[in-house]
Length: 328
Image (cartoon, rainbow, N blue to C red):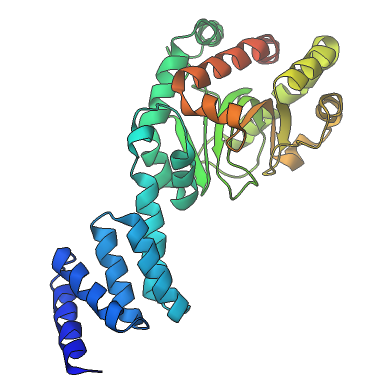
């Protein structure tokens, strides 16, 4: 290595040891890679410098250059992951003005562990809750539960959303763990083949999971509710539910699978009615889905008011089924 290059390297390493990733460190490492384009350590340091300066595009370029030289460079690989995470968490000027869920929010959901994603999305989910809680259908649902002796003055209470795995956050109405759940859910890509949002009616009949002390009794209750749901649909809602699904991108979901987009509405309703062992599925859901890769759906997801209107309309449509299932 030429003497001048050795001196640049020494100074660059000194700055790294001091935790200095500012303009001088960028200049030194940029000068090194200009003189020695295959210097993977300098490219890696340059990527770190750009990351700390929130220059994410430049950081990606530098770290990819380091990995092109050595694909096994673990430091560059980890830094590249961190760049993507921080870039996803940094809203652009355009995304700061929206109040819903855009590519940024679904990227956070994908990139972060479940609990971190839950916290990161908290302000937007809380804002959505506030809007939904102000609707007339929310008030009717709360009143129905109160008449059954249950507590709660709001449909969705603060901090009532959950995440049990990466790429998935969900919420259900207050007290609804073992009830017919008026459910909201966000999924990233992966684990699903498309980032999406669901709103509708779900039944959690899993034997395991959760910290509830009454899991066995609660599960039996949920199974009874599901049977009552089937009876309600069979008696009065079979055709109406299929028509609503056809007009509103309605799909069923069961177990941990994606929405069953391959099932026509009539067949989906038949599946619900013929499901004789829901306990084996653990989760059964019917409702409306919005997909981020569909332009019209993305516009709805991006604005809290529009998304809340979809939630309100869905809950209003499903309210008679929920009520008959819940109250018997």
